[in-house]
Amino acid sequence: MEIERKFLLIAEPPGLSGAPRHYIKQGYLVATAGREIRLRMRDDEYFLTVKDGSGLERSETELAISKSQFDTLWPLTRGHRIKKTRYLVPWEGLTVEVDVYEDDLAPLRIAEVEFASREQSQSFIKPPFLGTEVTGRREYSNAHLASTGLTGK
Amino acid sequence: MEIERKFLLIAEPPGLSGAPRHYIKQGYLVATAGREIRLRMRDDEYFLTVKDGSGLERSETELAISKSQFDTLWPLTRGHRIKKTRYLVPWEGLTVEVDVYEDDLAPLRIAEVEFASREQSQSFIKPPFLGTEVTGRREYSNAHLASTGLTGK
Image 1: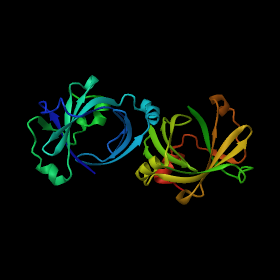
Image 2: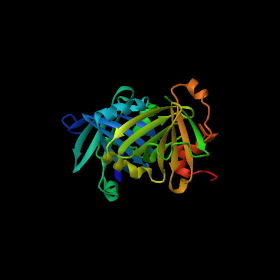
Image 3: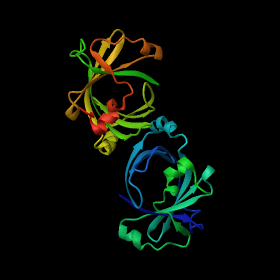
Image 4: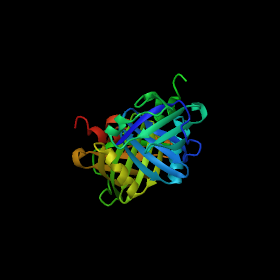
């Protein structure tokens, strides 16, 4: 079970430019309210991920797949794709994942923080570079962004 | 694009008992009207298949996966599974696939015939062991049978 909170970014976090990063492209085979099935290329690795549920806690099953398997399924995600660079920014013992979106979604930037427990997530004090919390807001989910873009941008 | 017709079986086709066969178990990660994503074990081979559309012609993308990949995803199909033995019965230059269902779905038996063209499918003369045509009837689709059983059995 993942416990994550998600925020809009309102300033550049200290250390962003030197932070480790991944180039990510992902597409959705399915994105219903109950179940998402996602293909992801992260640098030179490939994954198929099934996510169930919504909101703060979701269950996730991730499977490493080959480039060839990825290439076979990728065409089926047409119209439901995003590209982003993910920066891994250390912050007080946690890692803030900052996603910088490309193409139609630029200049959207969203930060996610993953916690070890519900208690830890509740006691988290937001650093000044994080703005409005959008945890569980469907219009900021990657599945939604991949299908319809950012509503009202 | 697959072109298939599907029939209920009303008698045992000649040659069934000696016909080549596969033991199949399959489960659905997703089964909406528009897209099905299926895991299948066929003897000792494993597949992930995405089917789009419905009725006589459907597009299908099939991917060989490892047993380990299958085992990771299989729990996510709980409640949406079927087991069957598929017999490959030769009939006048075509192959009739006879599926004999197990467990709750027994003694259901369904035959599928795949054609090279729409014309060939239309000129097909039904042999006497085939009964009611159920092509495109949702209640006889494997995805539906896997989720709800045979309605009205």
